[in-house]
Structure formats: structure tokens, C-alpha cells
Image (tube, helix red, strand yellow):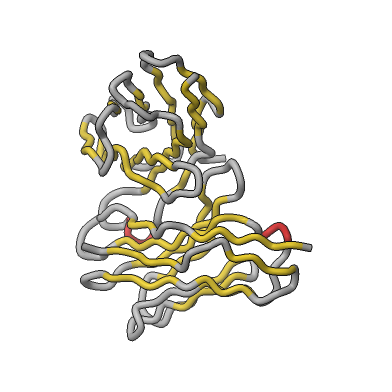
Length: 113
Length: 116
């Protein structure tokens, strides 16, 4: 079945550092790909998405490019802030059914001043 | 503003009691979902509903029950049969049908359930 694999956390960074969170997927067909963010004690918020190969999703300084050849959707931000401390989830929905979102395990990011 | 409202934010249950978590959405979404999240863990699907008056079990449905009598509402009951109910519960909704592939889910802010 379809699945998502994320790098394990926690990822600890200093403010203004470059952030990369790796996400790879296994899917039949051409899934849509998403990144969600969860701040402490809250629900998940959609951060960005890409619905076809080579699409780049971007929001709040975060970017991710849908790479079909490497089945990846890595999240990047050039200069993180303390307020970016959160758990980040990669997810996919398959296009061959109106399937449920498949989530990765989540990656905790801690940004220190 | 449209969104999903979960209530209460915090809930305490005595052993052996059933409790019901509320989830209401005004997004006109057809599909709704319940997830459980344990500390430091990912999301596990409990139940989902693609349409009113229909729902399916997810990966960890034992000890839980749901109903979907109205499009806007998808309450989750945690029964006494659920042996380890202390967790953070998240409700989500989506447009449903093939289009939901492109839009993803909208989540509520969660209910933290603690057994005392």
C-alpha cells in the first residue's frame, strides 16, 4: 500500500539555520503530496502542497518540490525562527481513489535562540 | 469563518465511563475523520465517514464508536472497552470525492482526554 517515510527527529537547530526535513513516499499512480505543521497542543495545519510532478509548494518561507524520479517531497526553509518549532508531517493522497491521507510519523523541529 | 470545532478542549474520564467528543464543521465537507495521537507519536485513524449515515472503521476502531446523522457533525464515543484512552484526539474533514485528492484535510484543534 501507499506509505510515507520521514526522517526521525528531533531536529535541533539554531535560529537562522537552514532546515531540511526529508520525506519519501511509495505509491501507485501519482499522489498529491502535503506538508502539515502541528504547533504544541494544537491540531494540524496545512503548510503547503503539490499535486503533480515538478510542482513546488511554498508558504511562510517553506518550500517543497514534488520529485517523481526520486519519489521525494523534502521540506526546506532557508532561515528558521524560534516560532518554527513544531512537528511537521508529510502526507499523501493517492489519485487512483479518493483515498484517505497517509501520514508520515512526523518530525519534531526545535529551534533555539 | 469556516472551520472545525472540537469540544471540549480537555476532558477527564473516570475508569469504566463512556465519554463523547464533539466535532462540528461548517465547511460543507462531505468526509470526516477521527485520529488518535499519543505523545511523541504520529496519527492513527480511528473512524472515518465519506457521507452522512455511513462510516468505516480505521486502523484502531476497537473501543470507539461514532455516528454521522448530520453532515456537520461526527461525534466520537470512547467506551469503557477502550483500555488505554488517554490521548490527544483530532477530528478532520475534507471535501470528499475525487476532488479531495487535491485539497487535503482541515483539522480541528483537538481534545485531550485523560483517564483519572
